Length: 253
Image (cartoon, rainbow, N blue to C red; front, side):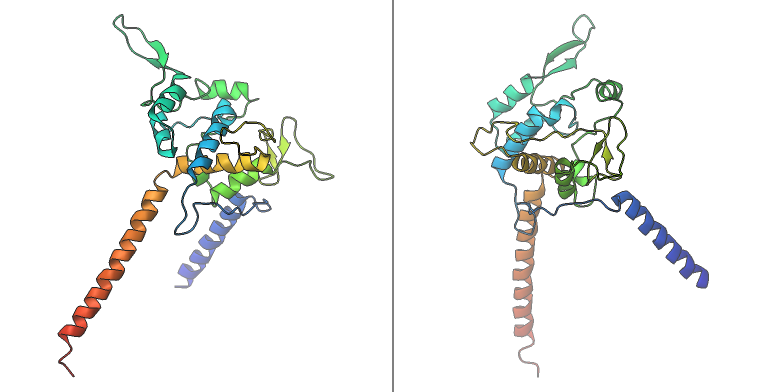
């Protein structure tokens, strides 16, 4: 028993140490009030469309989203024709044709998002050796992922006095170790929103994080709706069983 207790405590200590290292220890993570949080929370579809615009014009130049199909964009309010137009901006390899050769064609709604680079090595060469991660599940990659991504995008600062930043790196208070290869990407008025929303850096960041969270969890609204319906059903069923029990045992004293 003594060995079991000691072993359990050691394992717990190791797990805690690992979690602390993974968390980065002194990372500064901002707690953001997202529309989809809570039992009744849901996505703001106008925000999702703005977030897709940000990804399309900025993030998509370096980061892939390999798990998302163009047709999925209809879930955030794009029409079928708009989806076809977005997809056709990219080309994908297809084939073989009748001559047994591969060929390039415009992407279709049934295709995955086309990656900005043909392979990981090309991506590294274009980004000073750093590999831009795929963003399909980025908000699920860390605890409180949306807050982390928001904090990362807004966490660039000048390094404190006495802190040296390696060549090609940037100081970021939200990133583990505070040195990140990606330079600041979001600035005021980087995009022009079609709905007239003011494109501040903060707004742009929140919009793209919302889109990334939708990409990682597109079933969120359906899951919450089903959960609420299930809870209501169980409440009604419990009330019915209670009333039935009282009726059956009413004559018993």
